[in-house]
Length: 353
Figure 1 (cartoon, rainbow, N blue to C red):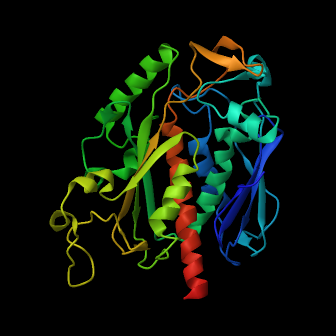
Figure 2: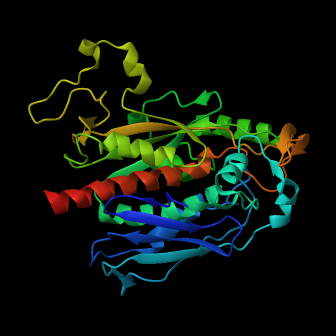
Figure 3: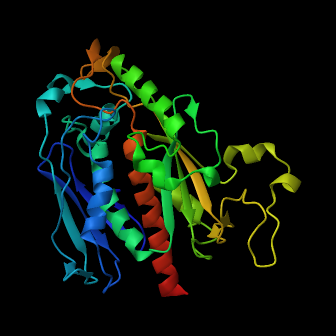
């Protein structure tokens, strides 16, 4: 299987399945001598782990990371950093009913067509459980760029949106509620909607907005490796993501150039920031902001028509423990992937500039 590695210089390779013994990864390119806080990495994992509130999957995984190599006396040695996260609460029997059935919206059919077999227990390698490994690498990447502020938050659930610009939000309040929305009134409405949808045996989607501040000028390359292109690839590689837009995004397509151009201040900053902190694929020092759209989780606790491996049309209903809405747990994953991209470009600049 190809496609298990992300990054150019700061690279993450992940391994493992949802219901295997463990998941894990190898991180390459971490600068030798970098002081590493294991506690900070674990805090990020705790934000992503299942079972943390009533509105997420009730699978109980402590998600304790164990580092195997590349760290000595609290510092990176410059060699590959290997780590594992044990799977401790697998209920593989919950998936026995789909052994020969293709779940609507899942990767079951295409996976089996591509490889000739599949691990049906929890989705195997296609499971979002793999994203815990990304959070480990992202938490480490944040420590390479401590001056950069990376804040993601839930900006919508279903048709409920935050009606304030990100500049009016207090990011310190993001983790003050289970839905990870920094506006308390909007968060309460979001949580109510998720609870209602869950009671119906259904799921709901939403969006995560991410703001990157204090990003140095010059990250990104002007042709194929544009900063926004790599951020887009990073976000679209996350399970359940269906869309990515940065800066003015699709709204910019309705504007005129005279409205959209960001005029310069004498110090090189811009009066507006419709370009989203990136021009010509390179960071310009302004805030980088983008939005990521997540579909409703495909597993629903309602009967659905599908087919089995023999092509027979059958009815199936989801079982087991699943998120009624994925966006609250996606917040640290979005932050992690953004951090990996920024750290990668930062280290590339140090080597080749």
